[in-house]
Length: 145
Image (cartoon, rainbow, N blue to C red; front, top):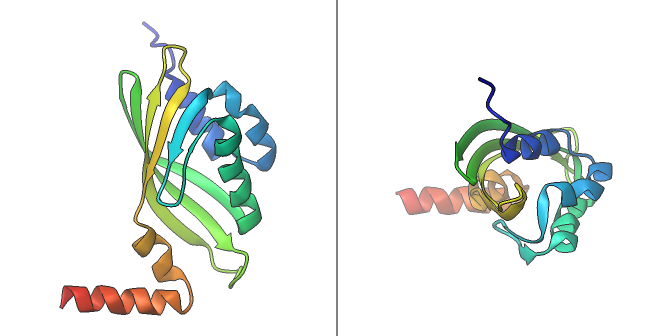
């Protein structure tokens, strides 16, 4: 017996193959009034969500996602991921990796109505930046002593 695909399959494929040109197809995965939240943004609606991903391509060099974990429970899913990129403003030779997860909730039509990303901005991003990183590592060391 063949199990029909879950809507999360399309989301995984979309993010693992994401390019700026793919953003025009967000409406095939997200409801028009979907909500998106991460450590830096909280928006609602396809134009705002698309804007966040479009900005990613202007701020970062060669950003890409690799989905590492997939947990599905009815109309919800949790994806673990690695997000790789190079910083445009700093040393563009070094690939950075942010590890995080996304909680997705789907509507009756299989469209995402809630996308919430979880990742530690201090550990995964700030500590890797020049100057700020040294300060963050020092603060972390002081807090742990």
